[in-house]
Image 1 (cartoon, rainbow, N blue to C red):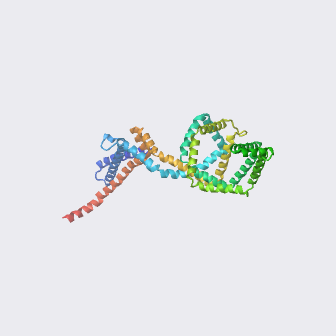
Image 2 (cartoon, helix red, strand yellow):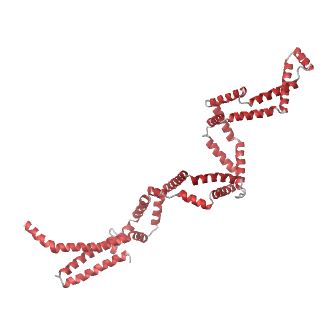
Image 3 (cartoon, rainbow, N blue to C red):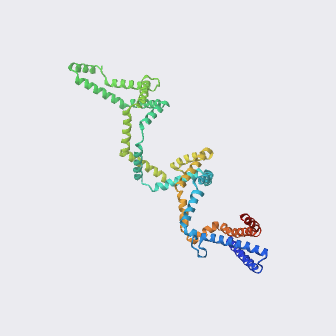
Length: 435
């Protein structure tokens, strides 16, 4: 039995008891008990009818009475707005939502789900599948153009001069300059030992001789001819001697304590220090950057690189026969997967990031909560809206009716007692005082 029916039965019972008491009072007007029952049931009936009218007036017009009745249908816009506002600003406030979300271990559930699916292998397969689908839809030329535009745009904020100086200083500090000088000495020695180098030296000596002979006088040319005839000036031997001397010098250059090497290294050190204050160097670096980024070869390089990357991404790969891209992806995924599993601090940071991201999304779309409530209630008819309120608060409203009859009966009892026992005593006293 619902409370609406209970309230109706209560009001009907009070009405019947009132009728019975009225009939008994008619035949026994002086009986104290009958008068008491009549007074109590009369007051209970008045209270019950008054509260029935008040509760019914919330939803419709009781007995056709239209003055300040049918409050919900009459004020449906205010009701809808009030309900939406309560849900959005009170029941689902952002601080309440965030507190609830912060108690959810997103990262633990995510890790468990991924682990059941296969862990790092599953993640690698998923990433590779996404890259493969993406690669199948792309054109290298278009991607290269977009990437070139992006790089040119962001490169405006790149200040390469300090980075070049920093790299140079780092190379000196970690011994890479000495390694470079060793490689330079080896390369120069190999080049100097080449037969082509001897020919170059010989051609150079012959050019010097021709220049001297052509610029000298007849006496000088005569002396030169005499020296050649007596083998006093043999350019082949001179070329061999110069090549040997060059090789000896380069061989000594391999020694870290070689004076020439130390001198060159000092020059490089001083030059690195001077780069910080060299505005011309900075300008040259910026110009070089601009030339590289605007050159056609740069776009061609990007297109070639992207083409190869797309080919690798599109190539078949299996766990037993992984391609290069899969091996690269899996190496990094495995590394970070193990790190996340064993690093509680990292998991906490990731979970905090997920919570912050979700809360930002909800914050941006928080007005949708009220909007959804408004849209839902706006679609209700007046009858639907009445039914919605009755379903949520109907039982309490019907208890108001039941309480009205009970309270009315109690008040009637008190008034009857006052009228029969108190009033006859205090009224004569009051009249005596007044007279």
